[in-house]
Amino acid sequence: MNCSQFQADLNAYQNNLSHIESILDTINQTGYLPNNMSSKDFEQIFSNNDQQLDEIITSYKPELCEYLNITEFEYGPEIPGFGNDIDLIQPVSISPDNHQWIVVGNDGQTKILTQDANGNFTYSSDMPGFGDNIELIQPVSISPDNNQWIVVGNDGQTKILTQDANGNFTYSSDMPGFDKWIYLIQPVSISPDNHQWIVGGERGETKILTQDANGNFSYSSEIPGFNDHINLIQPVSTASDNNQWIAGGWGGETKILTQDANGNFTYSSKISGFDEPIHFIQPINTASDNSQWIVGGSKGETKILAQDTSGNFIYSPEIPGFNDHIDSIQPVSTASDNHQWIVVGSDGRTKILTQDANGNFNHSLEIPGFDKWIYSIQPVNTSPYNHQWIVGGSKGETKILTSLRPENIDNNKIKQALVGKK
Image 1 (cartoon, rainbow, N blue to C red):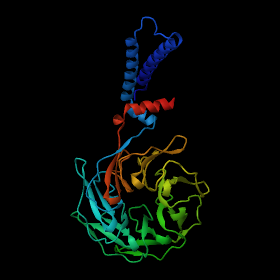
Image 2: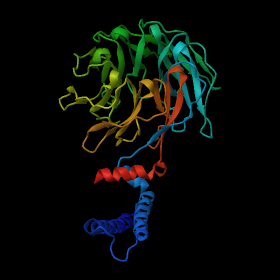
Image 3: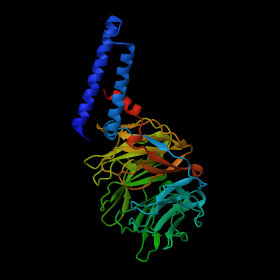
Image 4: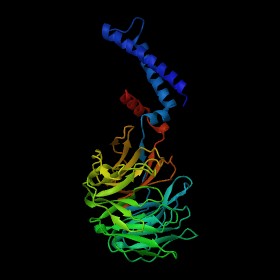
């Protein structure tokens, strides 16, 4: 941005604006236009002023949008091909140029969503082999060449989905050991050679799923301490040596799960402050020393969970503005200075949660365009500059949510924001 040119353009606009204000003062005092000025001349000055502001906005739109914190999102047309409720969308690869996603849902429905070279999305035919409702899918490895995923669902059903060298996907037989409905699966470590996962479900059932040196998977005995259904587990730190996780569930139950030096896991006492069932926990940033998480639940309850310097966890007051169930929270950018999150839930409710320069959080107005309950949202790519998300919901509704680039944002919206900044 050429700051000196911007200042010169702004000064010229302000001078013209001052001229208009002096004319209006004359009209207010005398009831007439200044001498030698026709109404046509006055209209032309107004027109020139508005045109001048439009030119300034057009020339510096990206910088003004950033300064005024303006983002606009819109939904594209529906992508047909998935008939049942969608529970999760998982990228096939974590590489930035990934163009395929595994989409899973009710009755074990599993399909591949592919984006072609023209940016169009299509679903594959169904992959048989998982007989019950699928809740979650987790890659076995976070390496770019991973070709296996742990898939979990109703009644503890746990299977491995494998992609062969020809790109075909097949399910393994069921792995016994988990008795109740599974709601979450979280790797113990973020390192590529991780071989353990925390699995949680109905009535607080928590077990460790381990892959041995031969590639076989088995469940541990139960870890006691969580009383209600567990919906989410989020690592306290993204550091490779993290040994604590935040667990959230029904009734707002929030506890810390800790792994000691001997590899044993224990739950803390309850952290009070969240009243509704917890559906999502999202770190404020990806830094290893992050100490704040956005927690969303039923009836739109949104709070910040913060860890103080002594290691204690405390909930903030509620952030108003989201009135329906929250099912997923997705950062707008993976950059460390991200300050916006896409919040989605029942009846297609989609809003942007923004943190301002003072650390305050506010929900935006609703983004229209999705009709059914939203269960999953996944970025099209992992770049910090990604501007598209795949959104999936009930009855297979699938759409692309796009963040409009600054050049596509209406000038009038920027004018309104400028007025608000005065």
